[in-house]
Length: 152
Image (cartoon, rainbow, N blue to C red):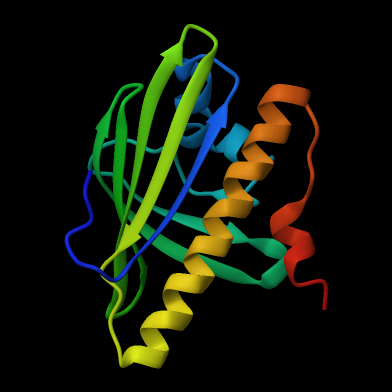
């Protein structure tokens, strides 16, 4: 979906796997934990309130899943306290063996310097997520991109 304002981050990637595999990687935490967070309190389902944890950083984010459309779309609100943003994943099958994934994060707040920092960090983060997903699904390799981003 199109961002609601101009303060948004976007990352996109072609994953050479069927849309059901790519979509499934984001709704099933047993798979997602191979390339993004390390723990989840539940599956991604419409109306779910879950926590995603990155154990290596001792960091947990609360997530409210607003909408899930099988093999097409996921919308979630995430963050802590009054600092929440919306993340939307769109899955477009290119053919029976390839899927184009688009992740848009919007709703950032703050002064111009804060907005630039948030957009930059989210763009970088979701780009690493998609690169890790691609390596995992296409080649069965766990690159540990998220964990290695801040080694100290």
